[in-house]
Amino acid sequence: MPPLLRAERHCGGARCRQVLLVERPTAALREARATILATAPSYQDQAAAEHGLTAAEGRSYALSVIPKNPDRVTRLPARRRREFEAHLRKKLAGARQRLSVGAAPSLAALTLPEEEPLTPRRRAELAILGAGCGACRGNCCRGGGDHAYHGEDSMARYLLRHPGREDDAVIADYLGHVPARTMSTGCIYQESGGCSLPRDMRADICNQFFCDGLNEIRFLYGDGRPVRAFFVHYDGTMLHGGQFVEIPEVAD
Image (cartoon, rainbow, N blue to C red; front, top):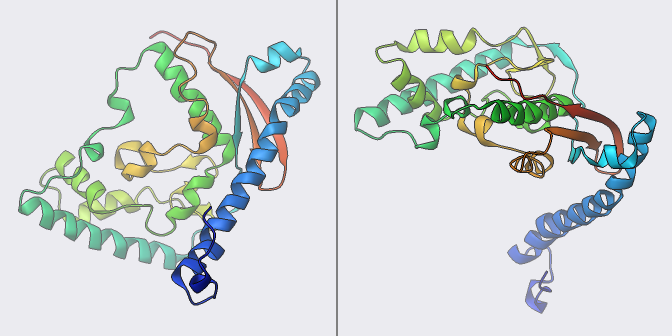
């Protein structure tokens, strides 16, 4: 990280604020995570022994260090539902305006993971990633709040898939999937069993984002190795928990 210039060494400087509020905390978090990650293999060995596995057997499970959502499930306040509806109507109006002038949503918004050719191995790979999300309880979804990451792109994609559908019908479809009980501070669709919204109705980022822990394993299975992973949680200070998960490849 470059040092501050003399003129920037005061709290009012833009560079000073950038370093103090963003760069140094981020660097510190990365260093702390790297330190913890260095201990993860030995943690995995210990967990393997507790599960009756040899160290070699335990290491055959791809190591994935993931967060864990600490929120609890509570009854959804009516206020959040109203705010979500207002957000949807605003983005839906914007999507209709864009489509009326020939502006299509992004290509990413038109392609879903289910539309890929799903071999038995690919299904197993997707299932192991889903198991990681389940173990985490959707920590990355916490930012969804009362907007569920929906923008004009996801609304435009819905309209293209359902031509002729009126606004009230679109809104009713989305509100119909909102559960009565959701995570206390998470996405409005985030219930105890995961996301209540069908994948083809989700915002683009929900279908495309993978946390660091899942990115570390998602490309490891192309060489024919067993589709298995050891998911361990990192809470910012220490490792805890741990699950050995294996997904068999099942043909249609």
